[in-house]
Image 1 (cartoon, helix red, strand yellow):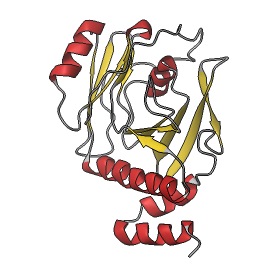
Image 2 (cartoon, one colour; image 1 turned 120 degrees about the vertical axis):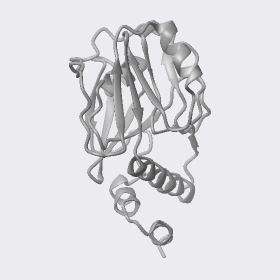
Image 3 (cartoon, helix red, strand yellow; image 1 turned 180 degrees about the vertical axis):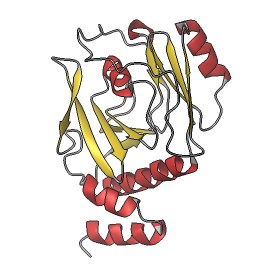
Length: 219
């Protein structure tokens, strides 16, 4: 996992970030090898120190106003995020979309006391300067922190949630500071995430990729 802090966000935080989810004191698990832990009263300095010290592959950290969630993703989690990334990036390649991928880069901003690592993240038509245009989140177990609230504070424009074999696209409303569900990606309107999901969930990934390629090229 890449761990590189983005520049501190100099924008003011949105006046309303929506209703914050209550912090759960326990893990809610549906995958036996996916673990989540919640730590309270963690200062910003301690969070940054822990993120830098525990920069081991696979560990995800989500921070919001003194509360830190640690998540060790399961094998299925990593398989889905890798498969989806392959199909999304291949879709962009075939359709001549200039997509830049940054994996699980750490994004954090002390001004809003938030930090997170997406499963995957992308920029369209430009390189990384602050936060990504799109983040991808695979949901197999229930998060203990409201990650959408964290992304809203970081002003990430678009979040793709993948759960139960399907995508939900969330777009940040700058007026309210909350996400709303839309049918298609504003950043990449050409992409059909139903097609991506249909092929990405297959176990025979190499053959699925060949078939997806033929579909995209009209073969």
